Length: 414
Image (cartoon, rainbow, N blue to C red; front, side, top):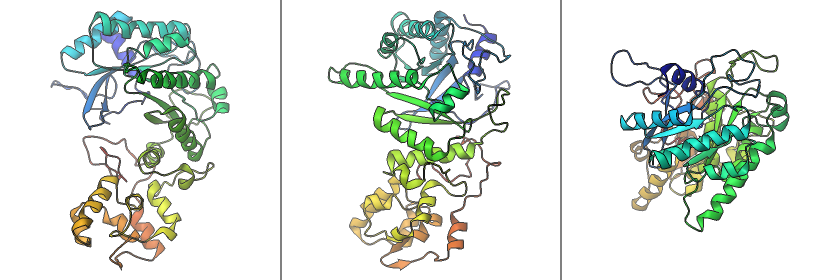
């Protein structure tokens, strides 16, 4: 059985991998039942909104690579540990039987070489499925540079795989992670996509939950526009389920890296823009230029609306669904409510209030049967839309408190 000391080291080393969601809480157990500590167990969400608890673990933090930004880099003085496939399987099963978790999120540093590490990860998931009979959710982080056959074989036993792109450009990758290459990261993503598409015609169970990736924001000089263009390309070319953003945190000292953390507000803005790209029909070119950063003062949809006064105000009683979802304060669910309610009569301001639409933002961009209730003054509109959040006061979104950023935690609507 894995020791408590080894488990502490490996679960703590996994906390910087954000290809899943977390509660945002760091509350520890103080003699009661349960533990919301940020390392060890994380939370992901299904399509129907159900929260799934996952054991989040590195197989090992012993790494042959020396990536400048990584806590587990070879030259960093940190406690090291390695768990065997059997130890991981037994831990997963014991946690599952006790109803602590519903699945496993397994990653690893590069131990000895990519092939050797991938072989150990593959052995672990095969044992879990075949020897221990575990049919719960498994998210496996692939090892860039590992043999294609190992990667394809792993895809037969896990629900989701991810290969982290990590840095938004090839020059930054060469500078900060010289032992990694763009080819070694992109090739398995492409091959897994092709294999999944081919096997779908045979109704084969291969990566049913698809692929994700992660980008570190702020460790390198790329602007938000470049990061989002890469994100849009990854969705379009490789059909990724999610691109996750991780704001840079200085965990090791290096002259190649910023001395201050990036902050969560920039990460949050990128997630908002990502939501607009995936669900609202926006293109990156509409939101910002490649050499620009997203606005700190306004969410991306508000910033877009302020730049395009020619589209506003829109009449809520006649606008199409595509037009409605571009109005600040009106999300996709609200837009469908409006479309449905319009069948029975023309809507009033009171009707929108009953629908829980954010009129504080929407009021300046809409009319109701020709009536305008907002302000024409640019300063008034800007003040109304500006969120009372600065980079210093930005906090991780939590399931246990009401965030000051007015975005739905569960739906992401803007």
